[in-house]
Length: 318
Image 1 (tube, rainbow, N blue to C red):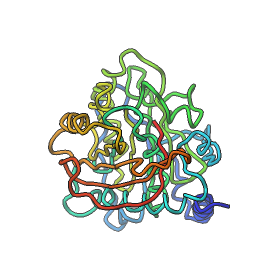
Image 2 (image 1 turned 45 degrees about the horizontal axis):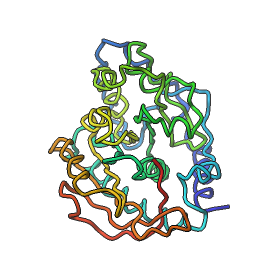
Image 3 (image 1 turned 120 degrees about the vertical axis):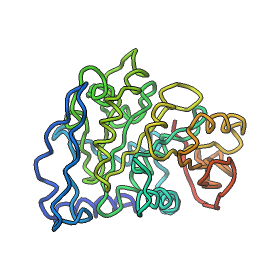
């Protein structure tokens, strides 16, 4: 049994032995389209928010199986002999993100994170999936992996949710509630929100107040992390919309492959007050293995600055 498989098994065992608070019925449905979300009601003083996570609004069926061999075959997980190295890399990557979500000066929606790139082929979907799995290992955290790349729909295809309602159905005129579109996985702390029904008005839907309200409602639980796999910033207008809604943005850059000018243009399209992180992917590429190595992980606005070394193996996704 591999290290990731053991970690997933441990999480499932802990969830089965945990108090029944996760099994509480979901909150009332979200308001229909065109109506504002109800204000958040604070818990009684004797209940600490750190000790209680409000139930995730989600479907009871289907349940997505985190099938590691299938994900490896699709190129979004590393070979078993590289899992330990990859796990260490993602521990380093997620720490600054988690730090930004905690403390007294937390930025609005800092627990909504968009993973994007300047152009296609940088490894953003690989990064989103592996980061979601790593974040789901955090105690008392819930992670919603959102397929925001409504043109390519890699997350939706990988988890076989092509015919299921999703993000566009919740944010569009159908006004589906989040509890009708978020899907559970067999990892208790990880959920998936697929792209949903195709629409020629995808950009307008993602720009809608409905989506902004839904993301705010979902992220109002501070221990919940909404991780969005977005389309490349220079490819579609949808990615810029999602980056504007998020509290943090990760830009995946392919080493020796992405022109610096493209990265600069992509970052300039993001609001200046938005925390932007960089993941340099496929540095020191080993061609015969079909996957690459991390070179740097940075946190800041200037491309190539404030980076730290992070050795290890990583494959390229979308």
